[in-house]
Figure 1 (cartoon, protein in one colour):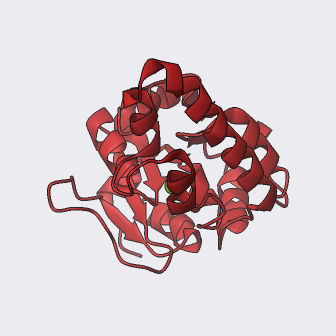
Figure 2: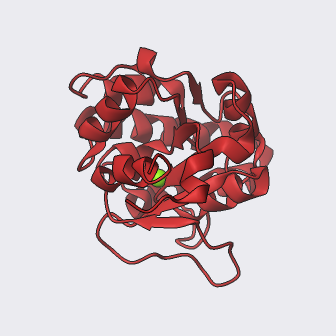
Length: 209
Ligand SMILES: [Mg+2]
């Protein structure tokens, strides 16, 4: 097998949650944006932050309700459980970095077979750091996982995952979930593009030769 020098550096994996570890669609962003009155092209958290002060807590409450609701119907993404189990068996440090909150993540993870929240060295949420694409959460996660950012692989299904990872100096893998890689040309290119999480253990194996 070809040895991949980038993969050789990887000592830990930081996963996005919704649409990465869980199947895309449970968190229906277009529907949530309609409920909040957020324009389709605007990211939700930034829309709420730019709303008049007196509306922000009401909008945040609506978002939290939708997040909690979605976590009840979310399912492990294709290959997520086998990928997490393979990394867990290798004692490979794993973390989660989400623009959501801890409560829905905890609820959704209860539906994963053989993996629990305790298997992750860190779960970084918008409650603990500035949300992606800000790199703060990636930097914090790497520190909590006991590795440096350049040894971390950030895996996610959205441009913000790649941008946050790159800004922190991490390596990045964009998960297409079988679709196209939708990174805009002005954004940094990911180091890897994978169709589903079943491909991730192989990618890491390339570092071992
Ligand atoms: Mg996502």
